[in-house]
Image (tube, rainbow, N blue to C red; front, side, top):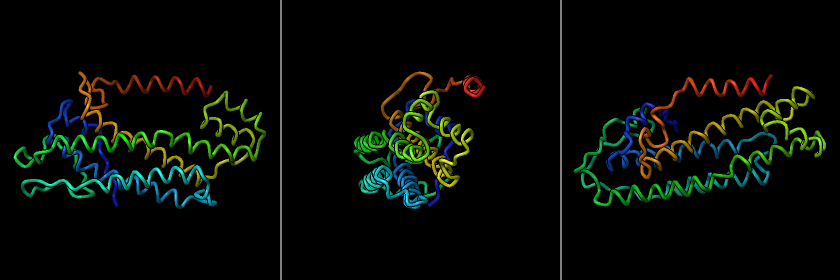
Length: 239
């Protein structure tokens, strides 16, 4: 199934204090979107090269994604007093500036529905907190096939994990991670960021209302300043 692309501009249109109708519309969308994204990650984990999916840490991460998928698809269907048109699966325009669910079409227990969904995705978010460290702990085991543990500890203390692996490959001409595995890691972590952003944004829209914020998006953010800040850090680490 197709994964929807949602820009920050569309998210910001929902406002810092959205109505229950807007929140319900977002709930309906995420009930469709999140299982698709989770399923894609399970498929990728199942198809890792070199039989990597048989490793305990990879199997553990896979089980978290499967459990979260099951939690979402098992949520009860939302029933409306009248038949309404909702965004179809795969729709590009899903975060509208105005709700397509009219107030008179809302279920009587709309607040409870929204709150129950937030509880469900908060549980999922917490379940997935250790994904990065669990995946990382497994791939670092590869390094011990090439170098002594003492050397790696000293080397990686001076480098971030990603930068450390890069320097090991460049300085010692050892292809620690194949291109196929590296490509998987890039896709996997980018997808993880997207999933956690969608979940975090929806939770914040339901629970947090702060000036100059729409969910977790700061409307006063200066992208140019942030880019300059990280550019400085990268230059310092590189040179």
